Image (cartoon, rainbow, N blue to C red):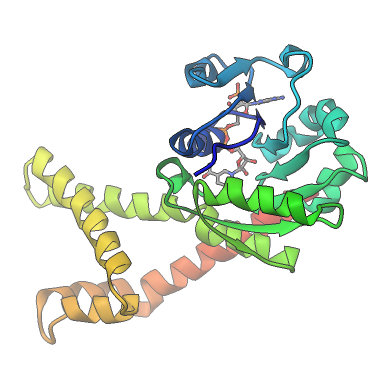
Length: 268
Ligand SMILES: NC(=O)c1ccc[n+]([C@@H]2O[C@H](COP(=O)([O-])OP(=O)(O)OC[C@H]3O[C@@H](n4cnc5c(N)ncnc54)[C@H](OP(=O)(O)O)[C@@H]3O)[C@@H](O)[C@H]2O)c1
């Protein structure tokens, strides 16, 4: 497997560092990370240099791709400093809500931009990314974006950019919903008197094991759920509560709609 080309990562926070961790496993040639936080210095290592701002990028550094991983609210202030790479590099924006048009306006209309929505399991190369390519992106650049995104998990390409808003709500934020479930399971285990260490282990391994079972099975999630749910048994009682008056389904629907709406608002 070939190592990745020279990359410029703008923003080495939670998502940027997760992607970098995934790329490290694949094999890096040279990555420059731009991030002003002291925390980001920890990302430095073999093949990875961390600088505080665009002025610190080594002279002559020619990245094949610039990955934009700052908060959407920082885009207008941060992005224009990278417009100088537009003639040579592909831009991959992972900023929630920021459209191809908006990012293009900040970098210059001829900048080739891929908009992508990864998620944090990227850190262990188990991410899922949905991407859309702007008109300026060449077939070769799209292949480069695909190889960078596939280095951190699965990648799906769509033509309709509007889909990125619900994708952000489902898979971009999805790990947070799963981790909340782990937190809630652990909290309730403690509340039922289970010792702390065992409570933590039960909550974590239940989700880890369930995910592994899902990955290993050809069956739908609903079939795997039914396999745990004996008629008149204990799980059925729990599920009756979770679904009473639409408790989980309605709440979940409202949560996804709220996140989708927030993604749309961030485009402004
Ligand atoms: N977290 C996720 O699960 C996830 C999933 C998909 C997409 N995303 C997208 O990824 C982007 C980053 O999110 P995040 O959760 O990783 O945020 P984050 O942890 O706050 O990371 C952003 C990083 O950028 C740094 N930064 C601020 N201004 C900068 C500048 N001008 N130049 C370079 N770096 C700068 C921040 O430093 P300071 O802390 O010092 O400000 C921080 O380290 C967002 O646009 C988000 O929508 C996130």
